Image (cartoon, rainbow, N blue to C red; front, side, top):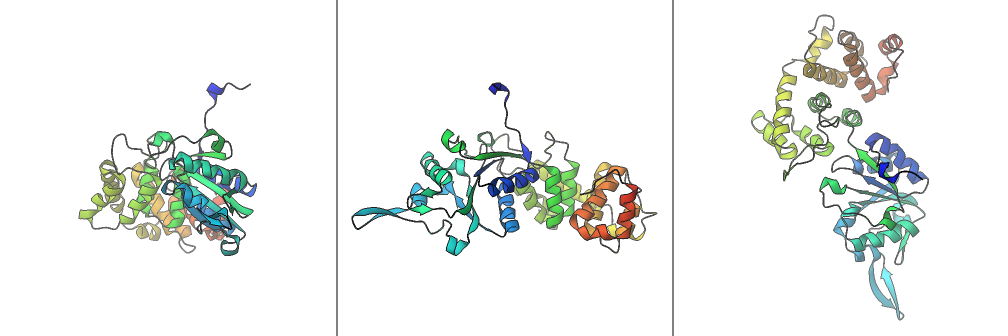
Length: 345
């Protein structure tokens, strides 16, 4: 018999959660994803739907009453029947396969959670039947996140597969590079990755009543304001990630821009200055990885070789992660041969 006092909920990264979510739902399981606000739970459900070419219907349980799920009762031929809510999946309208995403499920009332239990266990509630090819995915915050979450009843928890997600800098950076998030902010996240128990600035929950604080979601939103006028930029950041982190990010952007034109480095990779300050190295590496093309990749690799090995790998990994076709360029093949001890994703 295991020692139950020693068992803990092992957290996984958002990238690992995306893989497990697909495997579990393919096997017919209902999945419950736990994680702090803004960690990316909603995004990976949308990505799964896009990958599988299946519709995702969101049902925000915390904003609904039980009648919204079970339907309104009325009498037909002396019998009570329930009018099925139109927003629930319909195979003819929504497709044979798809995902019903019950977000913030543990913010819902106990009565709503009880009704959802029937849908999750039996695929039905009232007169409604979930199409056989549809899967239920749930998500919620932990009670410790102070996000109005409450404990779920045991019978409901036991009907789900549970994934406990923690913020992951590498996964966010990979996504941010592919999504075109401002490279200044990506470099800043990298620079601060060793803080806050390794979660950096992607998960800093408020200690008091702060309204704005850094999460994967709020940092991504802040990145939209990198190009704002200087006199407004820091206040825009502060509205999303709080005063202290806004000041730090704003200062880093000034440092980033002090490097000068990255195009000058590409034009003269043999003689361009090589930064020794860690913050400047992160800035240069992130910027060059974002600018890499088939035409200039050779020059970028040549400059990257003048940096320390960690920075060199960072530049090449960023570039090829954003554009897989760069792996077909001759200079990449030569670089990979010299670094055969590495596996570049």
